[in-house]
Length: 131
Image 1 (cartoon, rainbow, N blue to C red):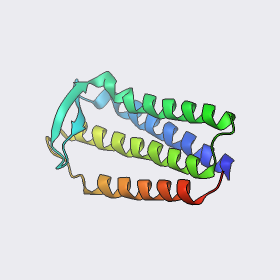
Image 2 (cartoon, helix red, strand yellow; image 1 turned 90 degrees about the vertical axis):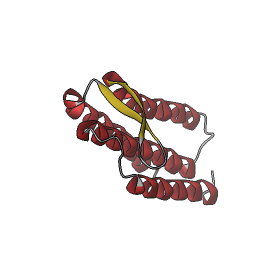
Image 3 (cartoon, rainbow, N blue to C red; image 1 turned 30 degrees about the horizontal axis):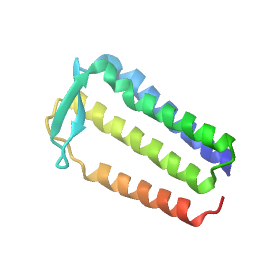
Image 4 (cartoon, rainbow, N blue to C red; image 1 turned 45 degrees about the vertical axis):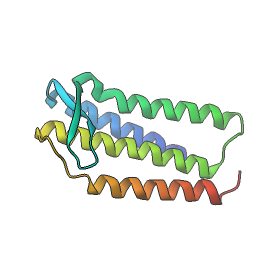
């Protein structure tokens, strides 16, 4: 089970990096980096910031890997980590889509639903699985 969850995390990071790599050349010089609750873009950053979420995903995976190596974590925590990495992927999809469309406001309902599902699954797994 642990090997599958690790593979899922690696696949999510690879998917995010691949998406960013494939679309990077199409991105404008300034890309949306923050959205208000209603989906309005509130902050822009330079194009290289598109790699920020990939870096965050890698950092999360490395930090969890160090924790896992000490024996201080368990399957539930790994499910939570995969959920956080998945939310980073979904955020990247939102950012790249908004940047390529040029819209100043994006639909957030799908993102919020995804976030709610990932948090619910992650917290439930962390709570109801034993180390």
